[in-house]
Image (cartoon, rainbow over all chains, first blue to last red):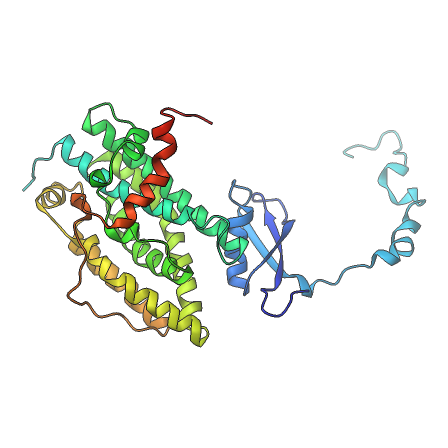
Length: 96
Length: 256
């Protein structure tokens, strides 16, 4: 969280090129959304990293808790049938 | 009527514009590691690097047209203060953040129509340099305008300091729009941008921004510093050049 007198924190998402989705690249401080986009342009796209920028107030992100890691993610570990590679494709099926 | 211009004329013109960009780029580089926030640090040095790129192109062009075998480095690092033809606006010490923003505003609002006009220059090299630079300067203008608005229409202190900075730097803008016999010929030949046209665009650009920032447009007084184009500079430029040039002068041809 930001301290009093400090600019709030923003998370920055950059789209590398048309057709790709925005990826999280890092964070920065800025007084408001408009300056956050400008700062992101200066900090994260100096080497032609992107064609589009999103900024999101870090405080507005609701994240999963590291304490809940086991309950959240481990149960998926032994469910191999959720992967398409689990299934054998019958001979003769085309266009897959 | 088409006037005759020589390579020498274009060399002098390119050198003037190049020196403006070079000196200001160095003033902005002085903010490295000193800006109010790290994000702003990067923004100011990015703008400085844009200007340095413009300076390199313009000095290279000046050297080529001059025909005395001087490259960009020889011109940037091998000339004395009296041989620099930048306006005094750009050599002023960087001051506080408000002073830097005030100068960036006055200069970028001048450079934007300058380069926009030069994209149609009869000199193809100048036109090509301007075409690349004009996009960069549009961002410089937006950066300065954004801060002018925030500081001018911010707190009591930020407004007072922004107004002070604007009042102090304002008299230096006149020199940007001076003309002389050389410039008249270059304008007539369609090579250079017309200072009168630039001055009108500049006023149209600066005044609404200052008013929007709830600041007062300074009045034009009697004090109008001049002489930079002829090599007459304030004390500050000598100190700046000493720092900028000492490495090249003590280790000629030094490389990374």
